[in-house]
Amino acid sequence: MTDTARAPHRLAIRALLDGAAAGAPNGAAAPGAVERFLSAHAFPLVEGDHVTFVWTGEADAVRLRHFIYGLPTSQAFERVPGTDLWHLTLTLPHGSRIEYKIELERAGETQWIEDPRNPLRARDPFGANSVVHAHGYAVPEWTRPDPEARQGAVTAHSLASRALGRDSRFDVYLPARFRPTRRYPLLVVHDGSDYLRYAAASTVLDNLIHRLDVAETVVAFVRPGDRLTEYANSAAHARYLAVRRLLLIGRIDEAERRLGLVHPTPTLRTVHEMIVAGPAANRSTQLKGLSSSLKLMTPLLIWSLRTLSPSRYR
Image (cartoon, rainbow, N blue to C red; front, side, top):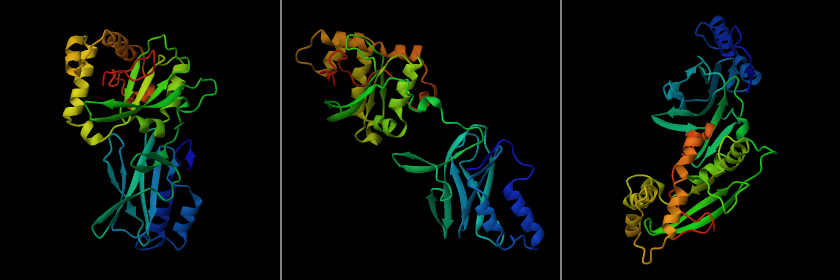
């Protein structure tokens, strides 16, 4: 994508449109003008604070679909008269990064597609979006591997949960200097495998811990079963959370009754002492750009940090 330091006196699309208006009574572009315009630029075309999106083809309507705060989520393209070129120019904040799709409407049917002229993609569990970088954007350094940062370890685990009635699968991140004899804050991340795969969460944690922006933290990346059920109004998930709450506020005896333990042991009180350190991470650290995605919470999964094996407390 083209990225100039300042917007030119006249945007490239405006030059095309002005030339078309001057060259034909109906405003149609001169023969070859659209082809020259498209071949001369990379798209989306970034010119200072302005970004021009284009699409070529037959359609009844073309729209940009995005999630830019403060702007309508649907922005209509305009068609250059007498051509199949559709265009839209927006003003974007300096240093911003936008994910989007192009919506095509034909005969009352709509279709969302990735921008065929833009090779940049952001992938997620639902597919991919096209990406545009406004002028001044730079990939945050803390999202890239830092050769000076020691790498933590990520291992897969499975825990049988009576409340959920299934095996709860999760991945555990241990900081590079992890010691079994120490206590650590615990961060639990819902949709955890997605953050590991699509958001480079392990690399981000390595970097933030290395820079002392985040305390050394144990992270459980939880993989949901039926997420639309468990993360919504789920009685089973509510029971799961209820026991967690009792442990955190120190109502150990009631937690034992809820869990239905046959032989309660003092270990449960030890677990409580270990997990109450979790909220301290929220007070002492900020996860920078990760904070909007990785929610810092007290534990939903409990295990012994001394042995790294699942505890009895599901």
